[in-house]
Length: 152
Image (tube, rainbow, N blue to C red; front, side, top):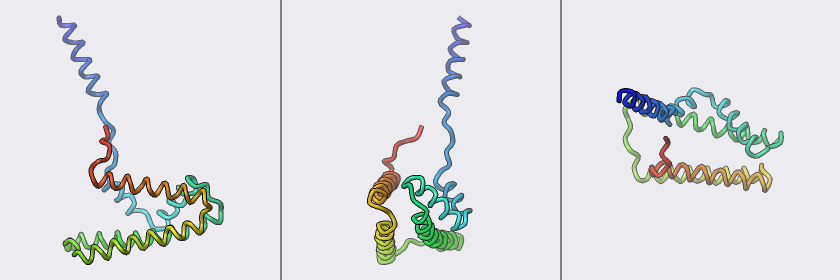
């Protein structure tokens, strides 16, 4: 009887340790790591990822590097402004007009990016890039809704 109890306890202990999940960094930690990078470093990383994904040639890499650097500089400035606003304690919600203006600005930027990417990439690369953008948007929507897959 003792042996049976010992085996059962050992089995339960093994089962418990086998189901421990690995800790993944959450969005705040990942965002904090990105805050520590300079705009040039962010642009370089993004360009290299795009080069691997889209098989870019040298001239395309240079053009996209320049575009990514502009975007990273703007993003970095926005992150700094948001951080300063948060630290100052002035974290009131934007008004309806402010939200509309922010959404319009974001959409205008996306339209401009699409046009620039269409000029830089060939048809096959552009289609692949658009598909990747659509996947990113879907993941983002699912994450915001809470419909994302639960990680185990």
